[in-house]
Length: 576
Image (cartoon, rainbow, N blue to C red; front, side, top):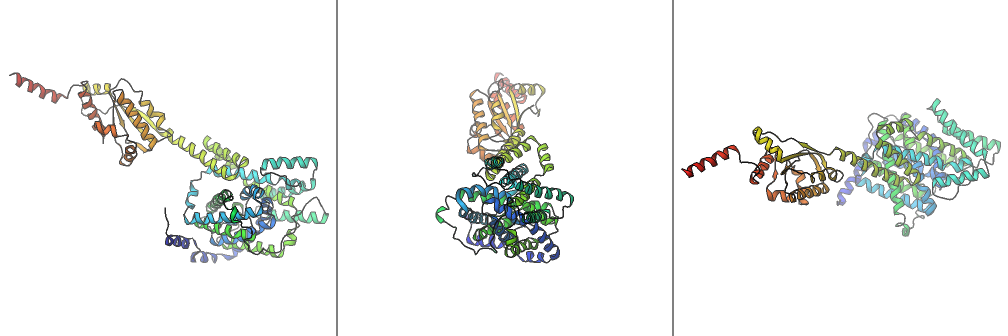
């Protein structure tokens, strides 16, 4: 499909903010400003933690939260979406950092941003609705497990071991902790996680994450606990935008990681926007605009040293629950984080890494919706299998492979379910205007079958080949008016059955073939023999009459009574 420059410009114009967006900013600014403040308080430790976990440092997480948070809020397709660094993206970035370094991650983010803009121009956002719920649930469960395991080195206060597989890194960190235990770091991590989890149950509206981090920082500073390693020095402000990281010669090598990042950014952002829609009344996001906004954000973020961004489900949920009604809330969240970057960097630098690990451990635990998982597991065996398979693949492989595996498994099981709906039933012959004696004779030599459902590759071999074993009849009538769809495989199998029966002296006749299915049958020559012999009919009664004529010509049945009388009269006249 080719798109002209004019079409590209028209689509681009449709993706840009309009007057409606500006009007919505003035709807309830007070509530939006308060919601933005609440989200910023929740987002600060998460941005720091995900920046550290990615391998680019806390400053990269802050830069992403500020730049992506602002751009995605302005250009995105959701009024309530909050964007920034996320745990899912961190899971993908860790092996990229290990293999290509920081410059490789920045280049990957830039390429992914361009891809997202291209997807928006191609109007690909609508395809998100085809991702099955078990894949999403398994994906989320796997991400939660990976995020939790990624925090083990910092939670135990040990240097992060070498490796890009989270299970291997976790095991090595446990071995190092067993040799040199750091109980102070472990106590900080567990305490922060416990405060967040217990506090969320008792007082959901209070931002216990920031309170726990502040308390842990004060304890570490007052008690002089060297074992509680801090974040370290942070720059007082964002760096000047630069493309110095870009190596044009490495673009081909980084294409695959960029595709993975773009796919994850699209999936998570659209999923988060859908969740926000479901939590409100009257809000509906534009999926193509959301991809466009995320694309612009990811193009800009690497220029400031930030990691790739996506829509953040947890922060978006906080935004909705805090009463946000427009993009002003997400913009306020980004502005407050920017103030913190410029004014409070020295204070932020003293936060213990173990405390941030505790925040992310609690976040991972809260990502797991036990009730939703239980309901999905009880729905059907197929749903449970897809969920578990996607979760395990997320943990053992990577997120993009996990989604692909989940989609392939879901597609295969769906095809299996559809194929089971296809049936081949033997049906009695319609009586028509035949006498009882004639009908009995017809039924002795004619067998009628009705095909119900799809005649395609997943079902055709299962039952059509049974027809090839039909015996003791002269004619087989296939009633095809209830066939819902036919593909090339089904047409080929049908052709094979017709030819096998014909070689055995059994004539096949069809009735009720729909015009839309005729092209597939003609393309493989499935109807060629039937047409040559005149065995294709519009209705079943016509097919039965055709079968009777075939039996008469074969000498199996006598001609109709009226024909016999005419023959007798002609004979008498001749004799007379």
